[in-house]
Amino acid sequence: MRRRSSLPTARVVAATLVTVTTVLFLAYGIWTYIATSNREYERLDRVVKVHANEMAVALALPVWNIDRPQIERIIDGLGSTKQIAGVVVEAAGKTHARARNARGEFISSDGRLLPAGAATQPIMHEGQQIGRVWVYGTEQYVQNDLWGQLIATVGAILLIDVLIVVTVYLVLWRAVLRPVTGIERYAVAVSEGARPVPAERGFTAEVESLGSSIETMVHQLDQRYDEVQESEQRFRTIFNSASDAIFIYDDEKGRIVDANRRFCTMFGYTPEEIPNLPRGTLSSGIDPYTGDNVAQALRASLGASPPPLMEWQLKRKDRSIFWAEISARVVVLGNMQRIIVVARDITQRKEMEQALRRSETMSAMGALVGGVAHEVRNPLFSISAILDAYAEELRHPDLLELASGLRQQVSRLTQLMAELLEFGRPGTTALSPGDLRQLIAEAVASRARSAAEARVELRSSVPPGLFLVPMDWSRLRQVFENLIDNAVQHSPAVRTVTIMAAEVGGGARQWVECRVEDDGSGFRPDDLQRVFEPFFTRRASGIGLGLSIVQRIVEEHGGRVRAENRPGGGAVIVMRLPLEQAPAEAAAMP
Image 1 (cartoon, rainbow, N blue to C red):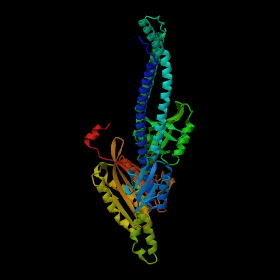
Image 2 (image 1 turned 180 degrees about the vertical axis):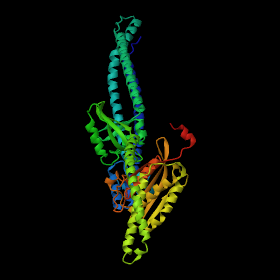
Image 3 (image 1 turned 135 degrees about the vertical axis):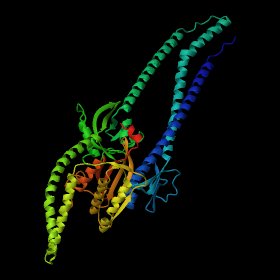
Image 4 (image 1 turned 30 degrees about the vertical axis):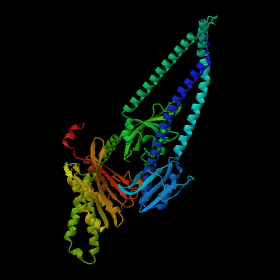
């Protein structure tokens, strides 16, 4: 019987292993390439959309002011982002466009040679669309990166194949094929009647030992992986179920890297938006509650035990301001140092504290002012009666100017006494559901004549629909009349005062937000915190009680009021009044 060679067997086994391994690696490489390609194109799409949103926000004011040089500068600023192929902005009857040429330069274009597909976003200003921006992405850099990855993957597969051929062939030859070849020789020798050569020993024991070691290692790795997964899941569960807002802050990069569900609810952002929030997004921007001051305060509090609690004004996505109590602690996650910040909404507590202090002050001041007004009103009435009695004698040409001045001063004092009595009157508001739209219309109509005399246009922008608000009709009408008078007196001639109302959500119930805006010079920044203080005024002939009375009446209606300035200039008084609840809704409220 002819002796068979073992060399073809070794080659077949090695070739089979290499082929199977290559196929597996190729399949893995193709899957990785497809997954990376999808991820990169999704990332490109997100980048384009984010830039479109940022461009729409940045262009709002320049487009509104038709500041074309500023529009051009903002568009040119996007040229530093290599993923952007071009930008088209339609605003104020003109199209501004940029596109990359063959050398990758960001140059002016007519907008017709841009690639298909773009992220578009309307340019809004004060709720009105004033233009539109298109941002186009380029796939060139994504394709270059994918091509480089493909080459690297193929090279890695080839290198691994060579290593497998060398390593596996040698291992198989020493550990498997050589013993099998010896057994084959032994069997052939026995079958031919020759003297058999004993087969190598120890092969089975080595394989069993190696298999046992591998099984032990795999079992330990599986156990460790399960522990890590369980620990990660437990952390994520606790993190998201916390009642306070928690976010992880990277101080070096100045951005938030992770946040829990309560943070998203409190600030109004989605989990996908959190990693892309610009620096200083959460700060109110009102001095001293600015982004830099928040960061400095957080750094100063680190290392203290226990961490100090700081009260800060923060800003939600809808730009509303609220009070928060925050504390911070440094932790090490892996090999990176992070700051974990805990925030709790304390707006209701701060408002209650402020309302209590204001109520105590107003009560004491109201009692004093009311008493003084009563004492002054009687002599003032006597003076007025004397002037009426001597009306005939005061018509003498030499006394006309003096009589007119006396009557003006008496009229002014009478108006002052009326406001002082109103300010000092105890709150006895009787609330019943009323149509706020009709009330605003009456208030605007009652002030139409005085506005026309001041050459100020009154505009009412209240949408159709029934805004049922628990109100004392006469008292709440007085609020709008006071606000309109205040706006008219502070507006330049031939300008406008706008009264708006819209339904908004807030907490467990719905509100109607009313805004009285003028296009005057606005409030001084230092005065924003004082405009509702009694007797605070910047007008020479003003008394300083109008806005104090407004605040008191609004709070008697369960509402809130604040003062701010418009971005384009002018003052704004914002009121929030609770809407009337349906019986089913009221029963469901705690």
